[in-house]
Length: 329
Image 1 (cartoon, rainbow, N blue to C red):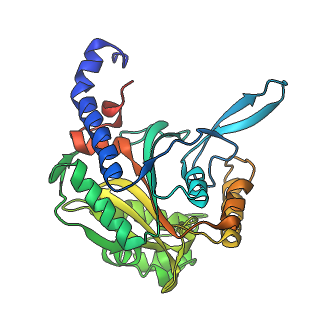
Image 2: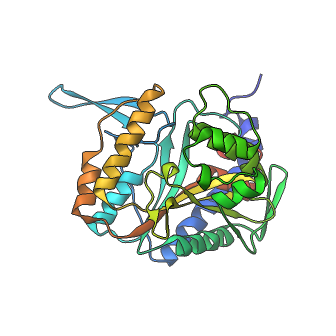
Image 3: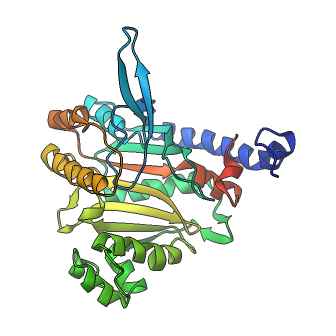
């Protein structure tokens, strides 16, 4: 039987990883302070935890002094709140936020974890990639090793999702968008019963693409199909794709980033589409975040933002094999 996390022997085994995490936290704050960012804190219990189709939120309840009650949710990301601060004129901001995602648990997942999010008004895809690469080099050694994979941070790979599918799955992703049988035929795979295009997209992504990227060097996987980027702006040069990237280091998915969608009408439409998809698979229900949409109507400046799994970064920094090794308790 394993020892509890608080047991002296258990904590002693984790202390080298945890002390590396503490140094990583200090280096992170120093990096963003030097670049003119302000550290912010936003509420954890919120009326709307997000609109992600496949994420499950923790439910809680607020009791008011008059005896009334309000259902709240532990947020899955501070994104909406931080974007409202951009509308208010906060400028470049970052946050080390605790977030919650129910039903998750593995060597790389925990139901409660830390997300590093930062947003810079005026930034685009190229500048955010450059800043993210600079952050990695500032807080990590030149070569990192985690879970048996070594990654050299001296330069990075940029790869579009379409090019990744062509290279690793043999499929023309954009030509088969929305057509599951066509994508299955192009990839040389059999379409499963009731499998949608989105289902097949993720099966191929998880099975053929992600295991092969972010090994020798960090990989920025860019230009996602528009349907897979509900909070990102469509690429003005190709509206089939959105200005989104994911970052992989040591073969681990580390971050997800957008050039932010600021059009309130399009954002409302996308929210409704995502809510319908979430409800169709039995996902949670909560009120639409009208306050966030009202902020977009008021006017959000052009910006780019990124959400980075800080516990996974701590694993990479410390050479840990499991996320529990970098959690204090």
